[in-house]
Length: 446
Image (cartoon, rainbow, N blue to C red):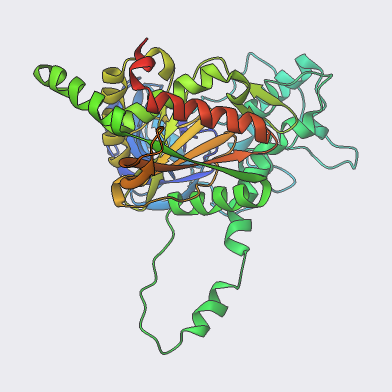
């Protein structure tokens, strides 16, 4: 029986993507692990591998197609002994059709992919529980695998919100639940995330109303790509739902700059050159260990306190930004952090980061000092508890400890804090630890 290849979900929040390029053509023989296509998500261009072997019988979605929804049939694979005659009238699932009372046959037998490749049809030998119905008698759309997991766990699917196409319940919606959980609350986040872009787009005057204001004026219309839509949605959500408060400190950098110059001279033979940003990453990572209660994220109805210091760093790219995460940053040397950060930044600009490299973390750093910005307030990236906005180091007159007037290199920083996670005194303690680490850089290596 021909195998349908579905548009994969390459990240937990992916709902649609662009089929950028086919790496195979009809008639090609492929094996498990062979590259089939390049797919653009809102964050990256990723390669999609085959999980079965066979011959590409028919390509259903042309390369360059945008807005291809997850679980859409993008190609059909013929197994050994099959021919084009076995394809029948297969066609790609329409992108905007809502689910009918009776789901399409191919949709009812597929499970949303949770990694790089789609799953095959449910084996006939393993029976799935019958399609359930809600209290109102209407059919609940759920994949066979999700129904089996729910039945095993005693989870009521009528109380679960699906994150699959058209609200379909998939494996990821039920595998972490138990009968005693509140499934609806646990499963609501994907649904909220899917509604966020629409809410962000809908805020303010409509597109037509804005265009009418500028009739007769020259302008160029820039289409929003997936990344820009995601940025608009997440930042709108953050500013509307996260109770920000801001803490500011001036940090004296002269001792750090002198220490950095000494280290760089010693590391020159190894081809290592430390930046001020490398020291800032290390200072923040150590501070999260020194103030462990601030190393936390907001998880809807609870707070998660992390043990390691996983620090995200904003990287500007064309059309948007990434926040790659340096995991276990408190355990790494300055040279290791510098090397890893350079690699992540390079691959971020090429949109080659894997989802696990830019998701997670409890704390973020946004440094605009290299652009000459003295100070600014950064927006928290949920579910992080805080983000540090870093300005430029500028020579300023200061009053020394002996009361004498002197000149020092001063860097202004602002800590944006989620008040649900970190209270004022705790935030101040964290920022003071960051300041102490940067003003006493040698101690960070102890």
